[in-house]
Image (tube, rainbow, N blue to C red; front, side, top):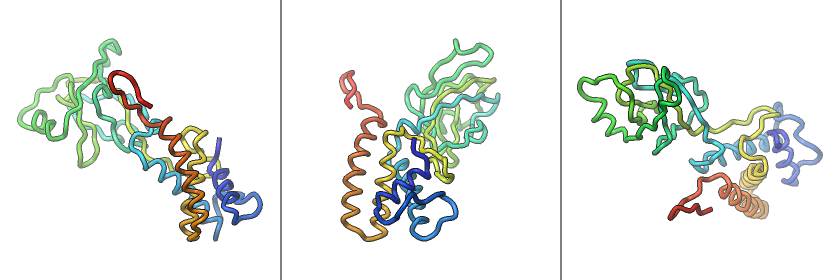
Length: 229
C-alpha cells in the first residue's frame, strides 16, 4: 500500500534531484519538495479524471423516498462524494419499504427531455415510480411518477475524485497500479523542469502502467455474448 507521503518520496527519489528520504511530511514544505508534493497530488487527480468509467470509482447507494417528492440531490440522501449518478439499463432499482426486497424491480432510465414531457407537465398522480432521470441544472436524481409512499432506491454513482492531503492518505485504486501516480507526477515535474529525457522516460512508463490499469479497471466490451478484454 502506498500512502501519499510514500508516493511523494518515490517521486523525489526517482527524479534524481532530491537526496535522502525526503520529504519527511507532505505539510510545511517549500521549494523543490513543495513542487513534488503538488505534482503528486495533481497526478492522482489527473488519473481519476482521465476516464469516466473507472471501476474503482463506482460506488453503491441505498436511500429512501419521501411521499410526494420526486427530486433527490446527493445531499438529500447523505452522499458526500457524488460526481454523477450512473443511470443506465438495470442500474437503478426500487422496492416498497413496507414489502421489502422481494418487491425490488428495475426502473427505466429516460432522458431529461422525455421526463419533462411525461412527468413535468399537467396534473400528476402520485404512484410507484417506474422511471428515473437526471436533472441537468443541479444533478438531482428524478423519479417518475412522483412517489406515493416510502420506497427504497438502490443504484450506483460515480465518485468525485479523491484528494490527497495528509501523509497517510491512500489512493483508492488497486495498489498494484499506484506507480501510475508516480510516473504521472514525474511527467509533470519533467515538464516543469523542461527536461526532455526525463519526460520521455516518465511518458513511456506511464503509458505502460496505464495500459495495465485500463485493462483491469475499465468495463469489458461484450460482442456476440462474449467479453472482450
